[in-house]
Image 1 (tube, rainbow, N blue to C red):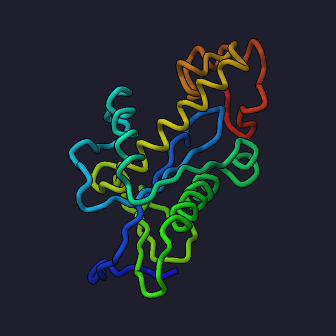
Image 2: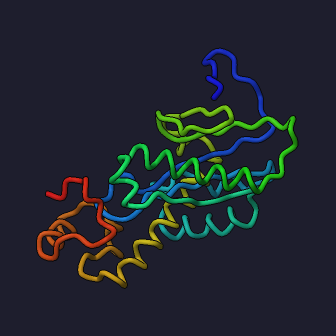
Length: 200
């Protein structure tokens, strides 16, 4: 994988942004989004998904899916998180999302691409890749990927709440909070809990 210089960054034909949602929860998968945006995209609808209301995130998601050049979401399961750790599972989910997007683009051999990801770690991909700290607040493609990942994961956890209603997943989405920890103590874990995480 090409190492990008801090002093000389080449231009690329296509920029793919990727981000994940769900590193911190005690339950559920980690979800990643990857997005390519066209020049005429309405960029003003984008922001860091954590700073947007649910209503604005859902509205932006519709437009992203309608107008993006390519988009995808992908997952790493709770079992994978326990086996390889949450950092590596997050990288794996982003790589899976990236591969889905690449498969949609029908690129020619001479098309140059770069993958921009949020944070300070990079997934192992076969094109140049740059990690950008707080990229979800500064890079439009990463913002869009963040929105898709957050919405997809939230929907998964709401669905999970119908199967395991005792945990309140629809409220906290699996994140550690007083109610979630109390439910864990009362009922024990369910199949989508992360067994290597500290539940206390």
